[in-house]
Image (cartoon, rainbow, N blue to C red; front, side, top):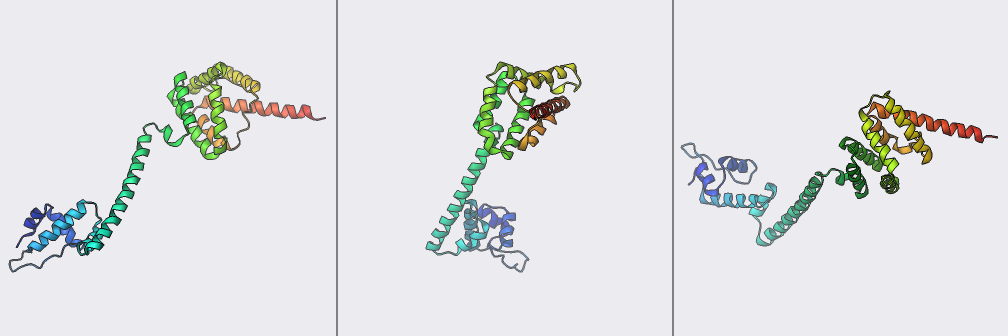
Length: 248
């Protein structure tokens, strides 16, 4: 007969594990003998070794009792079910690992390849990482707000970097993030951006569903907030003036 310590050592588990198996009903707990000790039989040692082996193989504790008392055919069927469940968990963990590894790049996890290429192009042009991250956030919001417009927007952004003047203005905006809103350089940049919008038939006052995305940019810089407000006001004024002139 074995004490609980001897039983645990024989099966290669801890005394705490033996008591846990008692608690969940996997291993019967013997009565105390006259000296007040619980004594375990050789059968208990065999059962405990089987329990440990099944647990180490990944069998859930809730299914071990049924397997201990199963006939060969039932045991094989149960093992097949458990194996299938383990495979599902492996597949799920593999996918989790893939997504975690993708987090190393961050952008690749949530954005199309075309956007990632544009962000990397910005880096190669010398745009600061802070502005690149803001641009990334804008694309994330745009994808959620207006996914159908994404392909064309990606193409337009890529093409814009082929234009030296557009690239120059983009770099100037990047540099202006920390300027005082009333810095004379901000006024000059506003005029240059306004002329660019006129030349390219753009209108800063019309944002549509992407207003939240643009707010992510302007909230990062008081200078950008003023630039955007003035450009939007000028564009709206041009549209109003054009409407008045068009009336008979």
